[in-house]
Amino acid sequence: MNLFVLWIDIDRFQNMTFNELLHSMKILFDHHLPFALAHGGVQRQLTQTMAALEKIGIETDYIRWWDDSQQGDVIHFIGRPAADYITFAHSKKYKVVIAELLTATGSRSSGNLLAQKFFIATAKRILPSTFISKMAWDSYCLADACLALTPWEAHLMNYLFDAPKEHIHVVPNGVEDIFFNSQKIPRGEWLVCTATITERKRVLELARAAVAARTPLWVIGKAYSETDVYAQEFFALAKQNPQIIRYEGAISDREQLAQIYREARGFVLLSTMESLSLSALEAAACECPLLLSDLFWAKTVFGNSAKFCPITNSVEATAKMLRTFYDEAPKLPIPPRPASWIEIAAQLKKIYENLPA
Image (cartoon, rainbow, N blue to C red):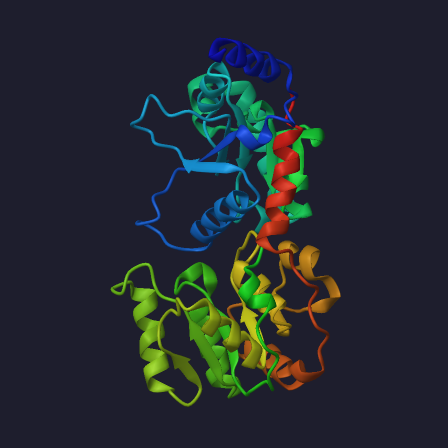
């Protein structure tokens, strides 16, 4: 009797479609940089994605590189794996989804992107295959699906790396429900910037502009290292100007952070490069006015619902933009509602379901 039941189950398993097997599938996540070495948005993106997938019934796990008995069906790689990585995965019957954050690439000018495209094409013709393999440019063509956070990055995956358009999917970051559910309260006098204290985020430059413009600015975040010279300059500036610059470190309490966004006069992020800022999306979920760097990612995501500031070394020019934003913030339009992580998980589920055979 037991053998008969087992035979029926195996027969049913063999005739199930890929879609029907999805809930028995396991998605393995991989990333090249340990979180202990560099905190930030990638860590939150990965952990929130996995948690949301689990909530809709899809099993997930981290790749255990030391475990040769680990089982799974799809490898979701945050970053760009080497071409050999994908080839080995395919030989083991894994599907591979890559989700590289084109942070620096997506912030380059049209001229620089054209030069990069020419360099890649030339390098493929004249340089040794071992060098080309290390650059992993071909990974976009080998992957079963490529995930882009914005339409701009989706365009670059095809334009620069020849990723097949039919394999490219735009899947933005999501926002936790606690930000959507936060209570509306009267907005205060502080602008808020939530970012790692590092050169790319231009927190020090923003703080200098705030001091020059006399606009109260609350910076929330921490440095990669407390001994970092850039961070030390910011700490000193904040200490010298406590009436203008408020800095108390990072805030891990998500409910408290949501309330800060609700109370803020506006959200400011003037980084030199971004992929899709989680902080900006969280502020948008709390209906906070936005001032962002004048970059493609921000324009394609927020359009006319945000204000944009050119990236410049001029403290005076940035201060002028900051002061104008501060004065206009109460009358600015509410940013569009971002997606929740559960909605993002549903998008990923469809992509996993329809991976090519």
